[in-house]
Amino acid sequence: MSRPFSQFQRAAPRPGSRIGAALLALPLVFLVAALLLWPVGRLAIESLRPGSGIVHGRGEPQQTLTLTLSGYREILTDRGYRKALVHSVGLSLGVAAAATILCLGPAWVFVRRDFPGKRFVRAVFTLPMSFSGIIIGFLTIIMLGRIGVVPRLLHALTGREWLSGFAYQFGGLALAYLYFEIPRATLTLEAALKRFDFTLDAAARTLGAGRWRRLFLVVLPLLRPALLSTFAVTFSVSLGSFGVALIVSKRFSLLSLEIFQLYTGLFEPQLAAAMSMVLIAVALAVNGAARALSAVPAGRSRA
Amino acid sequence: MPEARSGGARILSALTVLLAILILAPVVVLVAGSFLNTRWLGVTTEQWVAGSDSIVSLRWFGYVLKLYAPMLVFSVEIALLSVLVCIGVGVPGGYVLVRRFPGSALLEELVLLPLSVPGITISIALIQAYAVFRGQWWMVLCGHLAYTIPFMVRSVTTALRASSVETLDAAARTLGAGFFRRFWLVVVPTVRHAILIGSLLVFAISWGEFNVSYLLNTPLHQTYPAGLYAAFTFNSFQVSSAAATIFLAVVLPVLLAIQWIGGPEAVGIGQGA
Image 1 (cartoon, chains in turn blue, cyan):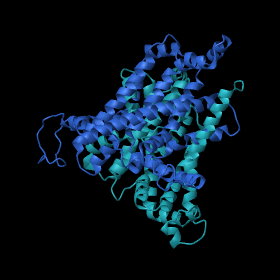
Image 2 (tube, chains in turn blue, purple; image 1 turned 90 degrees about the vertical axis):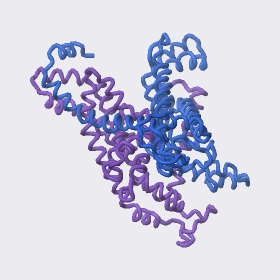
Image 3 (tube, helix red, strand yellow; image 1 turned 120 degrees about the vertical axis):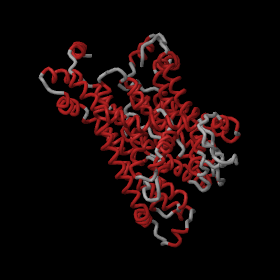
Image 4 (cartoon, chains in turn red, orange; image 1 turned 180 degrees about the vertical axis):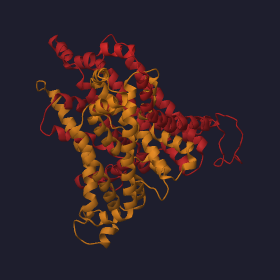
């Protein structure tokens, strides 16, 4: 943008300015180190320590410095934990994919269409963003619990209580997760579509491409980075959320919920740490993959 | 520029409105349930039976306010403190991040890392690393800061990168302004709007934060969402609804303000739900 000034800046560095910058950055660097690096580093070490063994009756806690992978092994071998991991990853993948696809429509509408009350509708879309998971869990129970509003309404209409207790099933949990991912996905995609060059779409149309052809050959490829990053963000949030599951989940455990319970109920910090590291690894892997995939040049310009 | 009316566009508009209705419906039920007698719907609860036959009652709000007042105050205090610290740390930090220096890309990645790491894992990491301080009120604040700082920083860096602050900064320097003077007179005015949006975001996130608060709190220092959890688990539908309605009453104005004055920075209020 302002090349001459940057060069000038580089040519004449003033020592005072560098010290000033360091001073300004210091609090941020300190907080990142204290609130992120140090705790996560400790967590990584903790996850490699032998467990206290209280729950599984392995006797006295060991005070040695030995490092072991037993925590990780337990996650993979214990049937309950393995199921929780599979549920967590499966649920997050499904919800992230559903939210990304579903919200493409509203995002397009917000960018390209005008209708009365658009601003209000858009505000409604951002509403669930500020709800904590427990509120969404509560809303799910109100609507789809055993005496939820939807079953009562369906009872009044059809004489049978359809969907009663759906909140406690896997589908209900997925619906609740989708509920809080909708705003995130919509706003991220909307921001990308705002930067989208719709003349390319128009050009394809004048060349005679049909709607679906344009969607799959022009719009979606150009939006690939945005779609991937939306997927990655929604995936990470779903993976780490446990508020909804805490209220709703009766039969289906999630890894985040297991961590919570290992920490609050059964005090097994080592295992909880190992599980946390697994969650971090999975989230970072998906984020990294999304980034790598969107960086691959597709022979077209970036959206 | 709206495209020519087509069937596809109409379907997408209908889908959008339908989704908005589905999003709004449970919230409407929740708020209605907090002050309406549900008996006429065929749902009875002992509180209403023991109470009166009136259709509308606000008594549960009084009950909740009395029961959870300390948590309400504590949560607001923590949220406001989070905003203050985020401004104090995030604005200068964001400015430095925008001026490229060796390692700035890495630092920025690290600052924004909490956005892509599952929420509960940072809570657990904090609790284990600082087990000694468990029960201190400022540990709750620290937990909230871990989540909220990225939002302030991102808001500020987005605004700075979209502005011509580099040019203005260089101009001010050629005119002889020192570093801190330039920061105060050039950079801060440029990001005023971003600071406002960032502050609203930080407040909303801190107000709704449950992960860290619930794991870190003690009976003395509970946040309001922790109180909500207690209400949902142990109290009746009406009390829970009233408590949740109060939660919404605080956060909705903030959310609407973000919508109304929002710019590019308003995108993405992610939260470890």
